[in-house]
Amino acid sequence: VVVSASHAYTQALRRNLQRSDLVPQYQVEGSEVRKGFKMMEALPFVPDDTIPTAWRHLKPTLPTDMSTFQEYFEYTWVGSSFRNPVFSHDRWNQHDATALHVH
Picture (cartoon, rainbow, N blue to C red):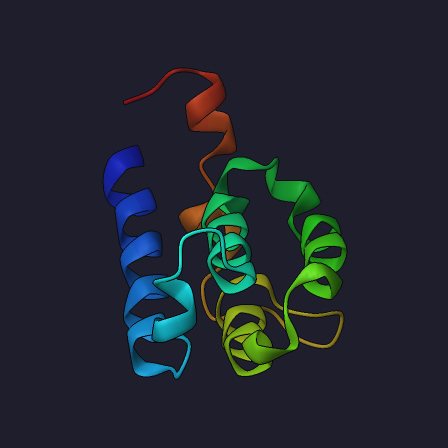
């Protein structure tokens, strides 16, 4: 289950990236867009209850070119103080399973 949940999350992010105008920037090794995307891919591995805090710290570090992608990400995966995300954190968060070495 861990692999499929993590895989589905990553695939959803990549599909959305492919639909954006960020692909050329993402393809540049070491680009700010690529780094930002990789940090967003890592969010499932922070403790579930710290996801909103982690996102608040990560969001301002992302390049402004990613603003539309950030909106999608927040709406779909993180949520806000005003509404829940489309996918609740417990559906995609992998912190506990990873800490327990569940494969």
